[in-house]
Amino acid sequence: MMLTPTCKLADVGAVDLVFVCGGVNVREAVSPALTTTLRRLAAKRMPLGALCTGGYALALAGLLDGHHATIHWENLSALREQFPRVLISDHLFSIDRNRYTCSGGVAPLELMLNLIEQKLGTDVSRRVSEQFIVERIRDADDRQYVPLRAQVGNVHRSVIAVASLMEANIENPLPLEAIARQSGLSRRQIERLFQRHVLCVPKRYYLELRLKRARELLLQTSMPIMAISTACGFKSPPHFSKCYRAHYGRPPTAERQPRRVSHA
Image (cartoon, rainbow, N blue to C red; front, side, top):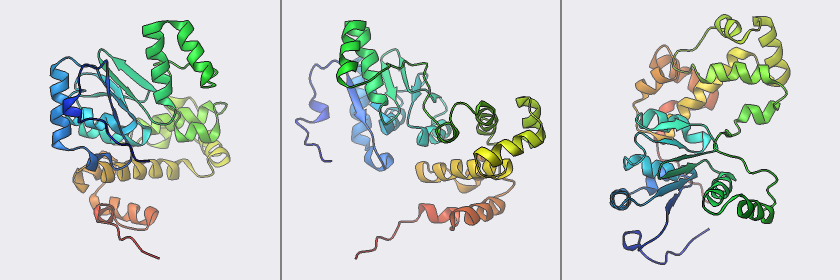
């Protein structure tokens, strides 16, 4: 979808709030001119927000430092690595002083309904939500759906608890025995749960989780491959490369090479 701008961002007049709308390949879309303009707006105390990956632009401009912020779950790990001064969360959206960020999908609607409630009251927000057929207005305490939760459902909380431990220990992977102790389950229970609901053994799931995180960092940051290998808990770059090639069918270096486009 193409949008025709009505004026240059640098020429924007008195507005209530400026949002950066993000999408795919956001790193290539954010220019020095854009970050300079965003900083200039921030200097004027303009409230700034970002939808989906638009948070990358605010973070690159240094405008999320010391703020709680969120972004689409596919970009969470990359932002945490690249912008350690940003307080990244996996919530549906974040409102911190005059910074407004949210994940993708329907999250912008949830954020807007909360802003409407703040400005115009619960009754107006409820009536707007009815127009959009939203049964429940979620708030900033709600978290994004993660793929595993969407896959196994909330009824299998033990699986999600174990997976959460794995996600929280990517750089220094935990042995399955340690995960069992912390989750209050036995090793055999964990293995049965994963084989039944995730269709793979826990060790394989943990490895794929780390490889997925590595791929996000390869595609979304300029981190050296050695640093990515360490950040994702691999013993050495050769070991990382071997596991990556076995899973994705290509070495990590290939992710950063220009893709050939075939024409029919």
